[in-house]
Image (cartoon, rainbow, N blue to C red):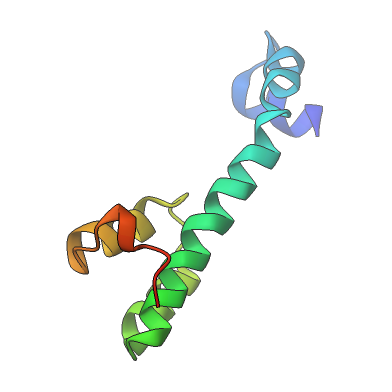
Amino acid sequence: MEKLFSTFCGNSGAPELLNALLPFIPLLVIWVLFWKGLALWHAGRRGQSWWFAILLVVNTVGILEIIYLFAVLKIKPSKLFHK
């Protein structure tokens, strides 16, 4: 993994950067799963199959899911978990 990383970043600091970023990977996974799950749930309940498919396939680290929930559906944060 270090060899692959150093290929893109050069030899200076690659292992240190990789080691510094590793603790954030579980947090990123939790963040993505939370927003993706919430957006897919709302799209599925509303029968919006195109949005469901797009949200399922495209990975934008939660950005598209947040845009869908708050800009497209215009859901208030207090209504995110209501049926």
